[in-house]
Structures are given as C-alpha cells and as structure tokens.
Length: 523
Image (cartoon, helix red, strand yellow):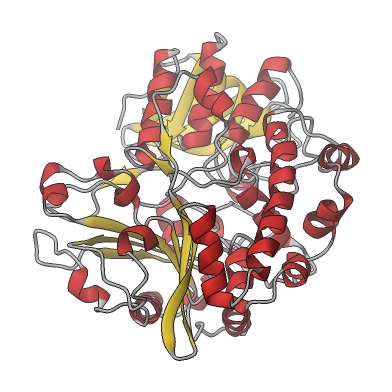
C-alpha cells in the first residue's frame, strides 16, 4: 500500500481505478499541468493488464488476464513517451481438423503462398482463399477508415458511414448479423468458424443474434491499428501498465494503491471522493472525477440506479510447459501452430452447437477455445532457467461459457470445463498435454483457470465481463457526450472499458476522458 494522499488537498482530477485506462488519463492530465490522484483498490496498478508469476518457484511472467494488443493507438504511445513495444506474430492462426479420416489443418500466415496452399489442401480448391482475401480486404478498408476516429470526438452514425464509404461493408458489419456475411463469403465450415471467432471473444452470442452484439465484437477485433493485427506485448502485458504508471508519476500524478473508493459526491462543479485504506477513511476533493471501473461500480459509487446486468462468457487458462506438444497433423510444426491463434473446436457448426447448449444452461459438449504461445514471439517473459530448459507458456481463451453456468458448485463446474476443454485440444495432439506441463516448486502442474466469476471476484468485472458491459458502436450515442465518456453528472466521467469505444487494451477511454477534461466538454 502506498501512503495516503496529502491531507486536505484538492486535486484537479481524482481517478478511481489504476488500470491501464486510468493510468493513460492520469498521464495525459498530469502532462497538461493538472494535479492528479489515482486511487487503486489493489496493492498494485494495472487492473486486468498485468504480468504475474503465478506458479511458485518458477521464473515466468505471464500476462494473467489480458494478453494481446491490437487497439492501442500508436498516438498514445508516442504522446506519453512510453517505453513499450509489441511484436507481430508471423502466423495468424492454425486450426487443426480431421478430414476424410486423417488429421490436417488450416494455416493462415507464413506468407501468401503457404496460406493459399493450406486453404487448397484443406478445401480442395482456391475458392475459399480467394473469398478470404475479399472478405478481409473489406474489413481492412473499414479498419483504415474507423481506427483513426477512436481518439477523436465521436462521429455521428451518418458521418461514420460516410467515412467508411462502402455500402456493402456497412451493411455486412453494421446492419445485419455477421453470420450472413460469413455464410455469403465462405462455404467451408472450418473457414467460416475461424472468421466467426472474432465476433465471439468475450461475447455470448450466436452468429445471427438480432442484437448485433456479435457484430460490435467483430468490429473491435478487426479494426485495431487499421489492420486488425493482434500483437504480442514485449515483456508481457504488465510492461505496458508499468510504463504507463511510470509516465504518470514522471508527469507528477500521485498513485495511491491499497485505497478503495467507496463514494462519490458531486454538485456538478466540484466533487468529493471518499476512499478507504488499511489506515482509515479519507475524503479528497476534486474538480473532476474519472472512473476507471465498470458502469455498475460507477452507479454504486454515485448512488444511482445500476445499469442492466452484464455477463462474461469466457474461460481463461494460463499454462507453463516443459515443451510444446507434437501434433497429429504431420505437416504442422508446433512452433508455427502455437505461435498464432490455435483454434480448437471452433468450426462454424461447433460454435453454434456450443452456444445452443450454453444458452439452455449446459456446458458445451465440445467447448470451443483458442490458444497461443507468448514465449515463441517474446522469450523475454521467461527467466534464464526456464528459457534454458526450453519451456514455453500457453494462454487459452475459452468461448461460450457464460457466468450463469458457474452459479452452482463453481469450482466443480470450472474443473469439469477445464478438463473437457483440454480433451478437445488433446484430440489434435500426438501426446497428452498433461505430459508436457511443467511443475512448480511444490510439484503441482503449472496450470491455472479463471472463470467469469473468478474475474468478477478478483477484478470486479461485472459478471466477469471483460468489456464491463456490451460493446457499443464507435459512433455517437444518446447521453454519451462529445467524447463518449459522459455519465450524466457534469464533472464525473467514465474512463474505463464501459465507455463508448471502450473494451480491450486500448487506452482509448482514458485518452478520451482526459481530452474531455482538458477541453471542458461534458464527456
């Protein structure tokens, strides 16, 4: 715990929550000469974007929760002078399948020629690869038009449509369920499934959900950096939040960890934040309060009615291996297959079946998930001993496991889901994953699983929802204000993932809340 803020001091801005968005806001405001206090409930900053050593006695720093970077604008890194880098993955994805009784797979990456050959080997022709190129040329065009707007004042819907300037793309992404476009472009079940997964990360929806929540998820997964690429943070995700904390402190912001905000009182011009630590209760005055927490937490702090319940739908598993497992597909090199996104049980029909079972309260019979190996792209997360032994990390993200499924015997359900998820992986391996797991200093396998309810307990994500609530379209919304961070209270702004254009490791809500303060806009 850090010491309490200086007594009886009023700040220009108090930021509730020291996750990456709160730190971005703190750094921008402090660099602009504003006095800033960040209050963080936990003993460390970083929120969900942290690196930890989860396995006793093993020198490996894993990105425990958030794990890849796409939506972080280079503008923020440059503006704040961050010592932070990402590395691209040479392979986008590998999807193992069995066709005509033999193990094979779809490799996307390693150059156009290899990707084309992989599509032809799996599907029997060049048709699906040509469709793949057309589909992602469309999303790439949209990405280039939309991504730069994320750090600008919110455009009106029609203005964004004009910027996109592609009626077919707008219809496919903004007007009708993404399943329609996927089915129109692709015929192969595996190819359809790989395309659909970007619409389902942390989002419990069917391909044809009329709410279009899957479209919004898909959009945020394909616009990052104007390319849609998902990169590996060098040094782990904690390297980003450590750099942000350093930038905020260097600019003069005060970071108080071990301080939990419990109440916000405001008259629209000035505010008071009541916060508690092990040493007692404090009240700190501020001209502005920026809340880097879920809208549910904001409502609790301000005494307002809570928003509709949110629900997460993912299983996060971290592992450390003595070696990468061999694959049944003789053409697949594990160092390539696990370097990108390794899709498991994510065929189009498998995804639909998993959703249907979970929607009626049952665990998916074949839980879909995806894996990647951080240490293949960035070996710096391993200490000298694990690196010398050839160890590797694996990160698994499971889909279609909503929080409601864990409401009974939580630990038993989580363990059952973990085992059935790993069984789906084992079906494509030439050796059991269990034989490759490293052990910690106490002789326990190096594997940990986190359900949505674990994330709610550890990080106060409502229902374990990694986006804090359903993602929003990146255009003007009623009540969201000029920057998408308004709360209905003039000097209280939302700077977390629940803001318009929030979600993912982006820093965008933090940037936009800071801009709203600096230009005097009401969000």
